[in-house]
Length: 176
Image (tube, rainbow, N blue to C red; front, side, top):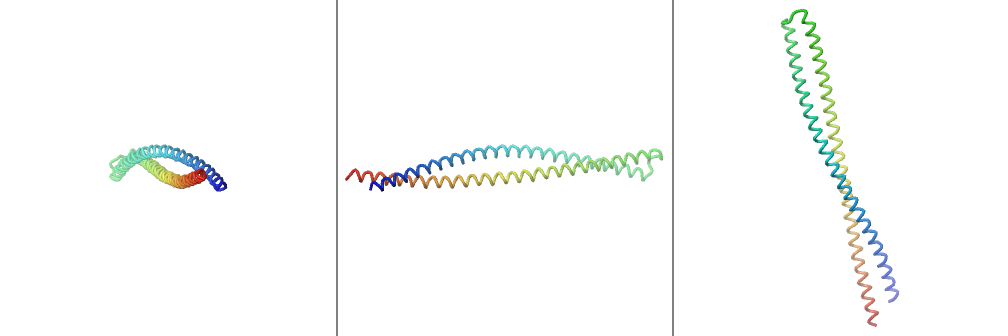
């Protein structure tokens, strides 16, 4: 019986050491989870900021589209005036230059508009990917923490059983 008690005490010591390790792991995971939660908050704030920025870019795109439409209308009017011969011969050269300048401005605005659209699309895709990565990381941490908690509970129950067995053995020896 003494060997059995010593064996159980050794097992109890091992179990306690494992429990301490598990407690440290759980604490590390809780710290990690807290850090990830903080990072997630930062990312969500950044995402909101980017959404606001994206909305501003959309507004800018709309303004540029309106400006392009106005310039096209102006250009169409100038072309019609030129076709109808409303302008005199000396003004025709100036109108052609004006029309070309307007056309260049329209093309420049189109390019700027496309650049803004492309930039907006890249930002949206990037943030969707980043948000997905954070979600996956968070799920991994939570899953691992659940596993550790289950392991900790198992070790705790095992420890309780060993302590009960030790008490029973000790009380059995005291009774002899």
